[in-house]
Structure formats: structure tokens, C-alpha cells
Amino acid sequence: MNLKLFFSVFAAAVFFYSCQEVIDIPLNSSEPALVIEGNVNNGTNEQVVYISQTKPFSASSSFNGVSGAEVSIETGRGRIVPLSEQSKGVYITRSLVGRPGETYKLLVKNKGREYQAVSTMPKPVPFDSLRLTLTTFMDRQSKSIEAAYKDSAGIENYYLFRLIVNNIPSKKIFVFSDEFTDGKIVSQDLYDFDIDLKKEDQVEVWFHGIDKNVYRYWLGMSLNENRGAASTTPANPVSNISGGVLGYFSAQCVQRRSTVIP
Image (cartoon, rainbow, N blue to C red):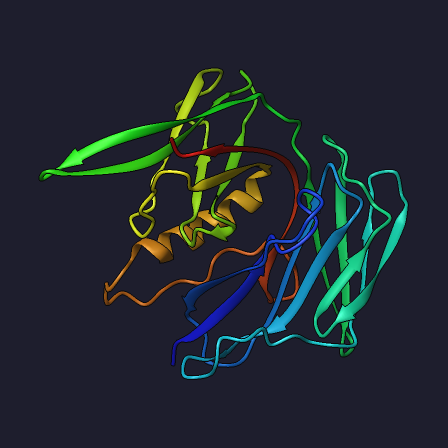
């Protein structure tokens, strides 16, 4: 039986306010599985880890939080920061600001088992601008947003974009590497077929620098998303967390830009 994993990703602490989203991705798993989703961001002292359990396909899409876990994050300087449970399955600290170039370790203890993950926050690259693009197809004109940035030469870089229109996050996953754009000025078209941009729409783009393991996770999520109605059984995204759980832990450098559709 296919199960669905319900994600509340990027829900708090990216840029001083909360924006919660559920990503509905079918997974290849026959038993309920533990899901851990955690981020360490720069620019804010609030970091969040979500712990939940998958549900059957036919169950409601509400967040199935897991209470009672012990959660901490260790910095590259050896400081151990505990997270407290604010609501069922939501663990928060407000005393840690992520630093680009630093490595962070997540430790979760739940029901006698331990789960660990390590992630290094990349250094930021210049996030230059947003611009509106127009595309005409079969007499229909559509609008999309292009994000321009300058890739750092000689360094493997991996990127995740989040598109938010009128405070509603896009469900589409925009994830890229610099395999063919090393050191170049890059313009990425963030087109979502399900979003019809209109005049005076408020658009935000969050630009996440992520490490290679987190990139592999989001790439797997993107491939599942693009299967559409294909009959092939979805594959579980590759997690960077030990212990056989689903999810990810990401130390990510985040920048944000906004615009209004003219």
C-alpha cells in the first residue's frame, strides 16, 4: 500500500516569521514510518525540528506529530542546544543562529532509538534579482518569475527555491545544482503550472543554499512530484538521517526577495 508523507516544511524561522506548508508526496512504504524534518537557518535565532509519523493514503492530511522525543543540535564549535516541544511533534529552540560554513549535527532520541544527521551550511552566493517573464502558448499568455544569482566558481553548489504568492507557498519543488553553470550568472525560471500570476500579486522567493546530501533528498522529492499519473511506484527520497527514518536535516543559508506583479 502506498502511504503519503505530509510535510510541514519551512514552517518557521526562515526569516523572522512563519509560513507553514504541507507537501503531499506518495511514498513506497508498507508500514507507518517515523519522519524527521529539521532546518538550521542563518538570519534568525529560531530553529525548528518536526517529528511525525506517516499515515495511510486514505487518512486525513493533518500533521501526525510525535511527542516525547529528545531533540538537540550540536554546533561545529561543540555547543549542544536542546530543543523543547512547543506543540505535538514540533520542537523549537530560540537560542541558535546558523552560521554559513559551519557544520551542525542533529540528534533525536525516541522510544529508545537514536537518529543522527550532519549538515554543513554553505556560504551565500549573490542573489541578484527577480524579474517577470511572459510566455505565449496557443494564444494564451502566462507569467512567471525568474530568479537571478551568481554562482561561485570552483565550488559545488546546490540550491532550493521556494515560491510564495500572496502568502501561499507553491507546492512545486525547484532544486538545482551548478553542474553546468559553475561560476556563471544564472537565471532560473520558477514556473508553476498551477499558479496564474496576476497584476498586484505579492510574490516572494526564498533562495536556499543547501549541501549535497540535502540536494539529493529534494531531487528525489522532485522526481516523485514529476511522475504525475505514472504507474511506476514512487521511491522514498534519500534521507541524510541515520536509523532508517524518512525526512531530512538541512543547515541552509537563506536569502529572500519579493516583488509585486505589475
